[in-house]
Image (cartoon, rainbow, N blue to C red; front, side):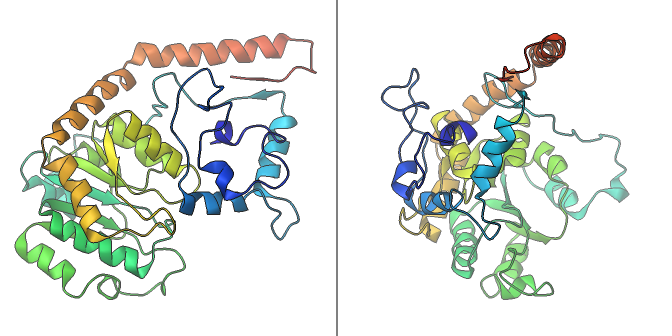
Length: 318
């Protein structure tokens, strides 16, 4: 995201939403050394443009970021050539059956690769209409699902019941038919993603969730909302490991039919085999311990070099 925004003076003092709907010249644009179509859509760009404007403190969020970078001698970004692999915590295979969470016991009864795991976190700015269309889209898709449901922040009272936020009878129908489980509260995400019954992940493309999804080799159905999530989703789509839910470019709304179509493309249709094959190849790269150790060694050498350097006017990034 920082690369997409560019240096402080790159976009002028008051960029508009139009400035973010195409790749910048230095990051995939016509004069860039590498091609890229990664950019924001209008409903996303309108929100992004606000981070360039002063907030109640009189300073914009981006000014704070730029100031931090400019005052640092060395800036380290966690990254790698293939894709930021991260270091997700892998599950403990020694769990006793009686201690297994309900969601894992439910998954134990499902066929391999038959369930799509749904998790959008608690910060996604979902509306009541979004929740309704997402729920009905999962219903219409006709595949089994596990929904780690978090009440959207600021949308409802803390004690609001999940049944008041979803279509009437949705959770009961899902359980009665055996096709789905809506779980509120904490869900052991890495254990869920590691389970053999899970075949795909419907995600907001937060970086942590994206890293975990790729580490466990699941194709993605993507529903991004804010900050870097849209750029991550575009990048994953370009890599051929999933699809975005089709949305209105103006307001970001989506319909149940679009949710169902995206889920079925990944989970049911022939195209899903291509997504699964692509993500399996990327999983192998991310699991290459020698390669990852090499990145750490390079970082350590970079730190040593700058520790011993006497030129404190030089700024670099590793």
